[in-house]
Amino acid sequence: MSDHAHEDHTGPIKTPAQLLWTSFFFFVAPIFIIIGLVYFVTSGNKPAAGAVDVELATAQRIQRIGTVELRDANRPLASGEAVYAAQCTACHAAGLVGAPKSGDAAAWAPRIATGYEALLNSALKGKGAMGAQGGGAYSDVEIGRAVVHMANAAGAKFEVPAAPAAEGAAAPAPAAEVAAAPAPAPTVAAEVVAAAPAAAAAPAAAPMTVAAGAGEALYKQACTVCHAAGIAGAPKSGDKAAWGPRVGNGVEALTASVLKGKGAMPPRGGSAASDAEIRAAVEYMLAQLK
Image (cartoon, rainbow, N blue to C red; front, top):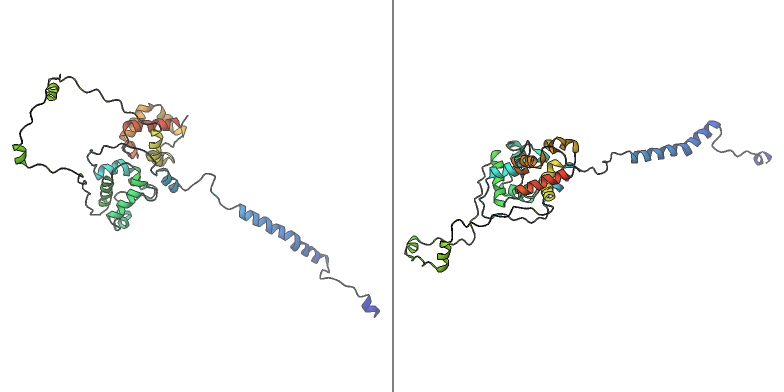
């Protein structure tokens, strides 16, 4: 009885080594595990502040903005080659931002297989980095002609869209009726106009002006696709080092370069803007350097 009363009650830890290992696993190891988890979570590759996907940013920059334009409805329709040179070549000539390179049959083959209507729909509504109507200001028929020009250059056999028939156009009168119609007698007003001196010409048209903010609007619509990221050698917007040697040429010389095209930049920067609007866009980009 006395032996059982004085029996020592001992735990599983019987040696200093066991005590040391137990302390390590229950106190030190969890600390290292927590530190490792924190490092794993915080050390992941994350984009720098403000960094975005280049193609997504390009697509957002060239989306059409709300502007009011006055266009000449009576001007002749541009050919597909002319629209391509003015509007499409900036990206399609070099295959920038995913655009199928002009003349590349392999890149165009799956697109040609979808048919002309599908290609025209993509060009009119925009696709990927390409804005609606390629970011330009041509009519649907002219955009269709440019689509046919590029597709046929890669092996397609699409027909060139014809000009739409004028609505409400009066049918020409028969020649017999025209010949039989008596000439109207001259009125007093007509005699007065005929007697007026021929030198009295109409007053000269007022110089063309642009609305406030037109330069910024054109920059966002047609210029930012290359100048925002410095694509194809374009001086990056706001980069004083890149613009330094160009600023010395003056606004007139820079405007002339845009109108004629230079390097990878097509004439008028690939837009259908007026000379005054082009100049306003140049002045806007120069203002970003101040």
